[in-house]
Length: 324
Ligand code: FUB
Image (tube, rainbow, N blue to C red):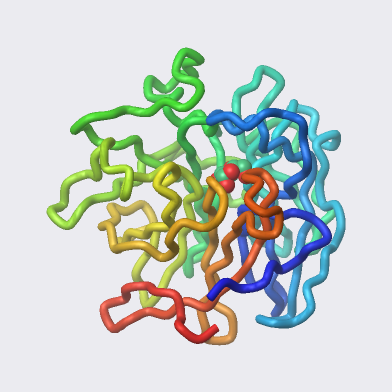
């Protein structure tokens, strides 16, 4: 059973949900109409600002807090404000967002606010050492904060295999054959949440049931984009989109750095090419936030955010709750 879009007055996508100050706040991309032709590089995802949504609980009215950050506010950005996320620490709220810099390379920026709804004031430069797309923040029980990121094809993760940006690998390319798939990334955030620590950027290993890295040709299970981290009963759940096979999958580990063992799928393909989600606990129940293109009748870059309850079985396996 599909849920209703959270809002219908604007198109929204890539929902990152958190409980802040007793309410659910959702940090989505703000999709807009464009004449840019669809391509596998994602040029049609030409978003220019962010709105923050909030609701006091499932089924309640959703507030659109208006523009929280716009492309012209950020000196280093040229275009494409893609999937953001937010975190809180030290009484402040931090918005993490990917965008192309003036040379067309995706970087990740941070912007700060006093309230979860913003408005957010961006740092003048991207986070040093950041690259690719889809930042997802996670603050562990001990206060340590992490940023997960990465996305293939238009997200440029494959351009960084040598440690330097290689433009010849731009576009819909990735390794193939029986070699390990490209791995998503994680970096521990500094105490002030504006930088990566000196630990630098690490790779997130996703293993199959035999303890072997998921292979590049295994498009049903390999990481593509949309990383998310949540913790359930002391275990770390790393979930992600499989891109061209259109699943939301997850893998379970004992540390925020992994390794993670593939656990299954949370969401089957939705209407539209992309799929992207977040998972959050609210008042003892767990919810999946995701998007699809039903409202726009299948236009891939005009998406709408929805939410559904999820449940865990005794082994910690996730499924959609039957009754919504
Ligand atoms: O919204 C633009 C891109 O589409 C996101 O960064 C990806 O995760 C995909 O949802």
